[in-house]
Image (cartoon, rainbow, N blue to C red; front, side, top):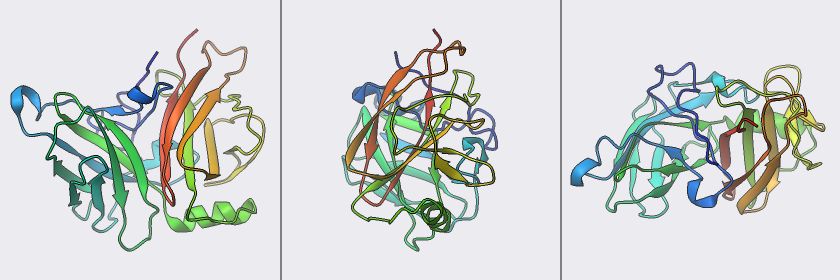
Length: 246
């Protein structure tokens, strides 16, 4: 079953902004937009804001910030636009799509590129949020964990949450390469399961996708699930991972 979270970036404008999440079915791997500009033959488009993750352990720290002008593009159509200085953007599309693979790129390279698949409704997706992470933060995590950056590989940040958006501790990936939330801001370390922030990260991930199976603790009223996540070279994929109830 596909689960999406309608209001999980708590520092953004209420429930107007959607944070990306992906399901186990590749066709469903997208955040859903409201489609209000694409109804009844309207102009296909994607609109939203880029937010900056203040602490990669907690998706709720993603908030709009003065990042400078970023480039927003869609893989499928090659349509592109730029944000304003606060990260807001509107991107008209030359083709009506059901799912678009959206990239946010900082031309100054202060923030790593982010790749997000977006589900469009009637050709449009409005009020989406695209999270970005500073290059300095990534370098600090890599240094702390003895990771050598490789531009041919990707990075994934995910947060195991329940349907209400609450992080879930004790969620296992069964993968020894996973990093989990640790003590201190932006601190990640190897382990066997998530801690209080529900964070799961992978560095040095081979493109083009990551299949991730999550197993919640036996005491949790949640079922496990498998997620298929897009991976691109030199880019970060960031997603909440919504576990369904038992």
